[in-house]
Amino acid sequence: DQQVKQNSPSLSVQEGRISILNCDYTNSMFDYFLWYKKYPAEGPTFLISISSIKDKNEDGRFTVFLNKSAKHLSLHIVPSQPGDSAVYFCAASALGYSTLTFGKGTMLLVSP
Amino acid sequence: SQTIHQWPATLVQPVGSPLSLECTVEGTSNPNLYWYRQAAGRGLQLLFYSVGIGQISSEVPQNLSASRPQDRQFILSSKKLLLSDSGFYLCAWTPRQFTGATNEKLFFGSGTQLSVL
Image 1 (cartoon, rainbow over the protein chains, first blue to last red):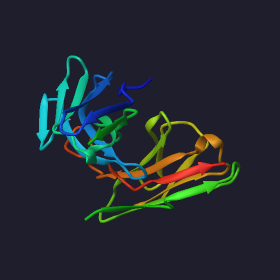
Image 2 (cartoon, rainbow over the protein chains, first blue to last red):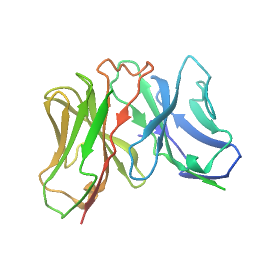
Image 3 (cartoon, helix red, strand yellow):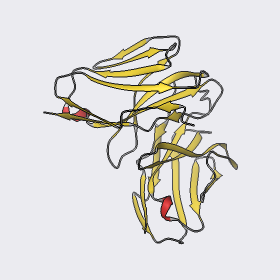
């Protein structure tokens, strides 16, 4: 049973436009959410996170929105750049647990 | 600063051969250590994690095992590799105080691409 779901395996966006990556979760115990970015043949790197007590967190071109009632979060990238092309993983954690649960990832391709 | 080392970067092994992947962390003490695998269509799957020397938790029953002989060393092993063991293996660490709900994150190594033929 997948507790963190990224239903879009891939997304294509033109440079300068907005990229929206979505993530759904089923475990109501999750209260902290993270996005990781991964280039081919490299380890994932942390991008941005949000606590369940917030509904929005912004860091430069990246904004994460959380809708707790819908158990849904999204990552917005504005404006998108070709260097943003990578696989983006959504992850969640629960208080008292030492592990993160990841989704399957969404491959973002930003074309010039 | 903390760094994580993982080797080798790539590995091609025949079916039935043994496996040993090593990961070490520098610049921190008592980290939590993790092995993840990225396989086609499966995302990042947690295989093992360890909160201390000799303490290993297995998330998925399979053909692999993990050991933590030293505080900052984590080893992933197999006695006989299967074709299905192919994938991109990632070691990661967090501070020991990682509670899952604070502003902490997993730090990943550069990964090992394992191809079992």
